[in-house]
Image (cartoon, rainbow, N blue to C red; front, side, top):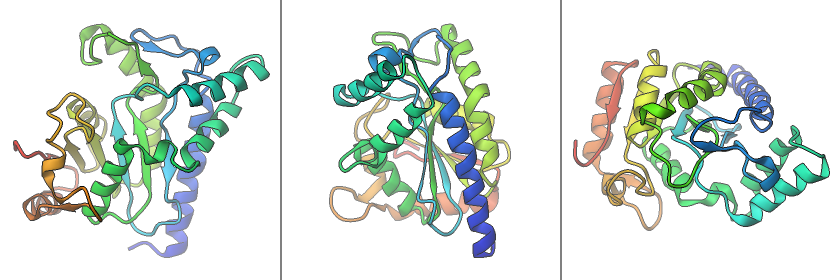
Length: 251
């Protein structure tokens, strides 16, 4: 077990790395196939944040596929910042963090709340690094990122951002993939850490209730996993710290 001071220094180093990556991310000049990166209209790369820096113990990296569509009010805030500064600047990172931290803001969306409940139900008490494989919104009506057309987009974004985020985190932080595509990506990117995959918490790309069915208690109070899923997770983690597990009611 790491001493508290050493643990704190590690988390502080992770936070510095994430802020540095985040400030690069929000001004990304790429115009990749299949995604929208248009700061003038408030559609920016986002959904990277370290939560719970003061929490003790090993943390978790929770990775989705890409950001969902941003609400109009927040798009207008980002667009106003771009207009005021005559272009995208690192200040957009500060705006994104504000949107995350505000009451009833981004962090309270069902996607984050349900996955946060999963992390706690697994007994993970440390910080959570929230991230995505691709940092931009997918264009409406487009094919899935698993389509061969978008391999270059995924590879470019992962190489530019996610690989560096993963390197910043200790190997005892497990990686959790939300949905099959994010899980598949993490199994390739994380050969030296445990990777857990779960159905998407809001039903994207899986049956809407697959995630919910993992839990004994879901709608009220703390999230409580069915004992067999906790047992399966703990058994696989103990057997192979570099292993991978897809945790689903369907097996």
